[in-house]
Image 1 (tube, rainbow, N blue to C red):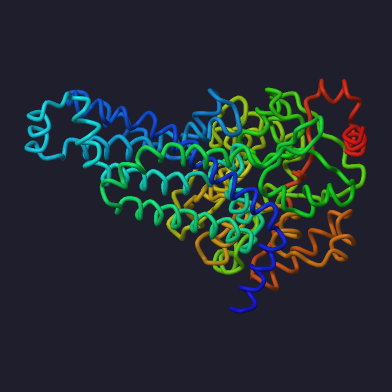
Image 2: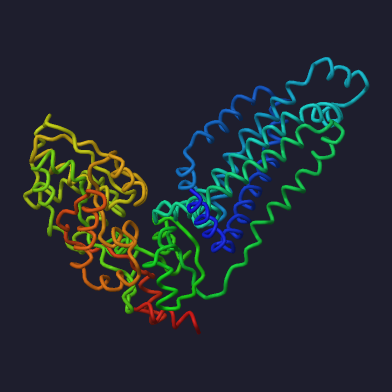
Length: 522
């Protein structure tokens, strides 16, 4: 336990510069959105307390916005506001609106009628009664709503990393993708501490004497505004081009770390989800992205792969990995799963991904059409012999492959299938397998080598240029360490790649990564 604590501390010290920057960004995102919520929610709460016929509609709309899943809300914002801070702030604002409006309304309408009548009897106007009597009395309730909104924002702001807005989510999602517990904790612990600290400080404000609370009430927007300015703190690094890299790519030795070490690449970067980075590049919001060599969006958005002339990206041949216990129990499973071996090359997989990513065909339809065209599809037997649990990561290619395997198992065996698709990154899928939650999922040899086995760099260097050596190494080690078997490779190599818009790359005379690096140094 002590060793784990020291390891985490050492990691946080090593990443202290970036950790501080992302913490400051996180605070800024939280309070920019909170400031907007207070400036809009407080007047709305006052309005519906005066026009109570509107309260049901206003609170209903705010309540519906709160029920939208946070990642979906961020996705809705991207077509309207693009990537980066704007959609993140807009989504956080909408999430924090309900508690501010509701508590303002509840606080004001909860003031005793006798007190209101006394204020009226003293000759106060409605506005005087509101600002001198009702709001001061309602302040503890209003601040309770602001406390709730603050804690919500701190938590939801971790998702901002998916759309290049920064924050502590960069560490969390990078750690999940890289199977790095220290990285996850380095993001999760500061985020939790921020929520606790801000909630505690606001609880102290909430308990102040009414006269002091009144002063704080008028100073509070200024304080929020100052904290909002934290978002402007981190200075952007220089450079003519902007790159968008996934959290996983940022932390991998065959990703940005390798690019900096082998090529000396120094480019302005933002962290972004692979779900939106291709379109962001197409729309000229990014110039360089980290992609996958068989991704259908290459064709959809007219992107070109920059040749890895110093060979830092290892082979990423896809193959099904299966728990040995499942293969021992159902021996017929191996032969059926191997029916896809050698059937899908790079161009075929790119075309299948294009159908999912751009033509918006469902993975089920794409999988069935492929199997039918190859003479591999059979009607399901509705088997009762047992159930094979198939998992997948959260991108189109994995959905397509998992559906193909499900159809083959149902058509060629007396086994049934339960699919658990969209399980996130490598760590989630692999942990689910080692914890007996799934029996199989499609994996990649490069991921098995660098993310899951993590051998010494010397060993990696000896394997990286030979696809058969990589496959043999991961196959042997998975079987001995985890009792998991790699079956025959499917045939395509979905390696990491740097990509640019075809027209831009042509104009800048960039076709290999070294040329990109030389251009950045001009």
